Amino acid sequence: MLSQELMNLLADLGMPNAVLKVNIMPQEPTNEGIDVINFLFSANKGVNPQEISKVASGGEFSRLMLAVKYILANKTALPTIIFDEIDTGISGEIAFKMGKMLQTMANQHQIMAITHLPQIASKGNNHYFVYKDNNTERTISRIKQLSEQERVQEIAQMISGSTISENAIRSAKELLEMV
Image (tube, rainbow, N blue to C red; front, side):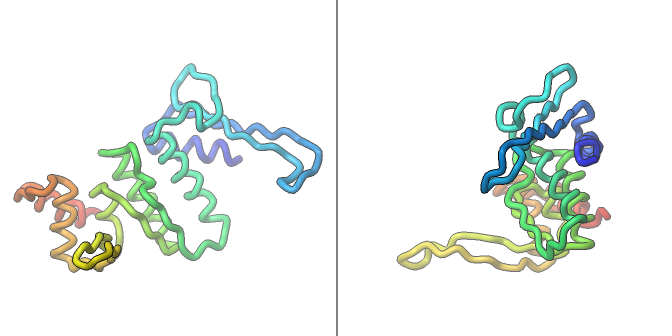
């Protein structure tokens, strides 16, 4: 059952008390279908599930969306899946676990993840840097594939900010070496 699969994944992503219920209400047939479906969610013990938009924080919503896409990816023929900041509102160990999930998905699909988290950026096979070029009369968005050394520098900058320390470089290398 979908809701149980999602709750198991959410527990792995740091929400052991998450509850997800699917509320299906039949209706007269319309262009949108014959049912109205609502997902009710609670991340916390003792809190009744409510509409996701009313109760999920940014981090909770990010984890829920990744779990949904993780399950659906194995049931559909999606050659490429793009995640645009799926890691909003998370950090630390949960970011690492999300990175591992994306890495697992990449065994069957091409995954493109736009992220600001080093734990997720370090899990990719390739690393691209997207930036704005203001050298002309008009701003142009550009993309550059990073070399291994540039990748270490970029991940170190994600860790420590604009002033990159030796510790940040060591941490970036460590993240890249983790399986």
